[in-house]
Length: 473
Image (cartoon, rainbow, N blue to C red; front, top):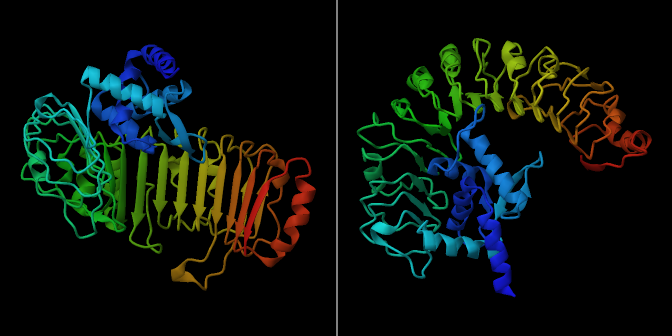
């Protein structure tokens, strides 16, 4: 019976379009029952060269369609979704993984170093280290190395064809440095344009950064913001940089890193902000941007950004805004907007209500007015998070928001509403009954009056559409 099932699964594999076959086989490079992050997987596919060009789409967007197709064909199992309902983590079914492993072995697609038999030497193209094995010294043809053990044995030399280096699972303590052997990889001039994904990289130590071979540099794993070398900009093929601490040299040269798709910049000084806007306007491929000042009392002046990145999907701003940036309304692809510490005196909603793809809106101490009025738009918004909690540096400040009004037809797709720290709000938002698709209402640190009125109001206003209510007072 098992052989019959395997033959059926083989038919499913053979029925895959050619561009999906390698993507499917690649999933077996992860250990058995491993929970695979969506973003990690699609970036690896892109780095491996599995993703075809599609007009008007980034490689990551194309790879995401590949993932959805594999899921729809039951080749991968979704184990977690994000708040917008998209797959966030997945895994391989056991029988599917067996099929992928056997096919990979026949096609010499990858080698699994898990303590069993593993092909070593020059034949290995992709190597997945899943136990502390002793590597061979001749791996000159290796294209990809993924390490899934927590503590890495010294890396051998000779990775002259290496494209992918994934060390996300390695655990390093805060002051522990990466093995010195990695320096040898940085200096290889024959390294093809590909991905070097160093999850816990703190500094780039190389004498020659002009080569610019690195496609992705993910700097993460530490709580504090990292300082980047002033000559980081010379890596012109960089696509992803985690949150780095700003300095004048980095900000001035940032515009030369035109392949960037994702970056976070913290501790931005006021004197550098005009230069920062000029650099960001040159990053036409950017889809994810985080900008923050040194503390919540500092101003973030972003109005000098005359031409924002047209592909921008996620935007996080941390700092006081004198006014709403005029370019907000042009962010046609924006799905996620987070404004923190903005303390705007003008209602920001009129600038963003018409954004056609906005799904999630986070406002944390973003508005100092007394009334927030949702007059129109927000047609695709699913999650609204309003937090007016006093900031720890200004604990005696008087919260201002006293009234929320929602007009009929606004936010027709809203699923989740969060009201946090709105202690002056004495009643539920006026017009909340119009939110017919609302599923969850979460309130924390709100007024006693609102608590007392809540149950009556909910019963009266949602008599046909029960919702889940979570209150923490």
